[in-house]
Length: 126
Image 1: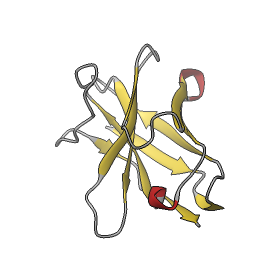
Image 2: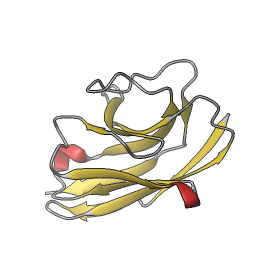
Image 3: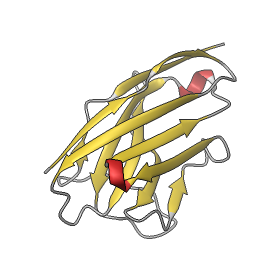
């Protein structure tokens, strides 16, 4: 199991930026990818971005492509999500996840082996 703790959420005006962090601890086993998901009230959880263990590949949902950037510092066991040009529709609770890697070009789909953090709230006002 991997323990994940997110931080960095908050309230920001449209057009602003935030950086989320996720510190991982424990044994990842074959969970070679880390990802970010978000869930807005009344909506399903959606994948935002994911990255391979050694940062050789990143994937972004179309809704955030060009605005968000996922990265990691393996020495610090920390995953990041840099969010720029934020929009009100980005308002959601953001979750960090560790899981098997999807096929390249495909979104991360949570399963029974997905490890989750507790989430951090991001609110974007217009």
